[in-house]
Image (cartoon, rainbow, N blue to C red; front, side):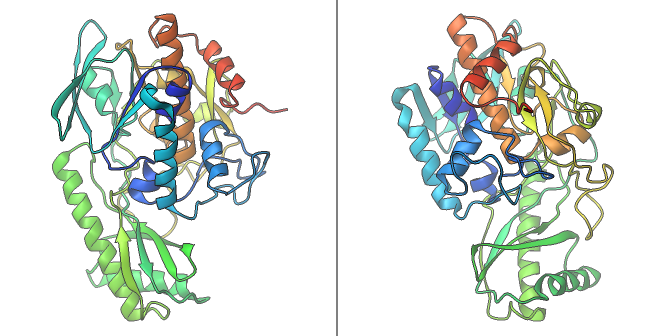
Length: 405
């Protein structure tokens, strides 16, 4: 959504292809209401503005002149209202921005280091699109992989998580601790393969528990494995609900509201792009002249075997100060008209555990959309575009990287 809006705002004729019946990515398709990555945890200072900040303001979460926010990872109160906002914004550009929901990208055709066709499947059948520039926001780097651009996949992959909601829950002081104890017992009894947390918040209503606790290992780029993971996630969600309803005071009169509609995927392919952002870049706060976005989330790498306890291992949950992400991290090698945005951008596994989150993904999308529009205007490729000039353009539009004053 960030990429499409940015491209259209910069007068590039844009087509947004979305597999769901709505836009919003993980916020709406998975149900995660957090704007992770908007602000520095240590100071609360907002370090990402542009489209993600505008959305947060429009959802009534902060004022347009806000410079800081608490908590540093604010939440929105309605994913359904966010869908409507997305429809409104995407529909405001007329023919400059066309949207196809319920449409799945399924292949590409490349020639001479250039994507010549993108194939998508929807109710019209198999559709061939001939783009000038392509931005891969699949999260899984599907277009990049199919086009012949170098990609990588780190094993073991972080597990997937299905989010779900339970209604008519009575909040108590001991609720979360007892919920965790009940899950430990359910796991010991063989009723639950693994879990983490659980994370339970009452974001949407005072009596509705929003839960992130499912942990399903798997590879979301494999159709059969993704199907298995979705099924496992639903089984685990129901098992958790039944366990709590039976054993945890506060859940005795509860009911299962909904889950998904998609399982949340943390990690699959990543672009091996013109520049690979590293953990050392983040820890040392390396500055880049062609920086186009700022990251600030902690190194949040979930293990795919360990149950309960903290969410991250390996990186120790390291909390960096705000750091630069360069243009080269979204530019493909070998394919001159391809950019990526979101968690499939070019970074090591450790670095990506910080850069993969919602607001950072949207900021990279805004940079990619702006870059594609600039390249179209000058009749150059996105690979040839000067990242410093892109940074300057983003800054002029109230976006781009955070700069200390």
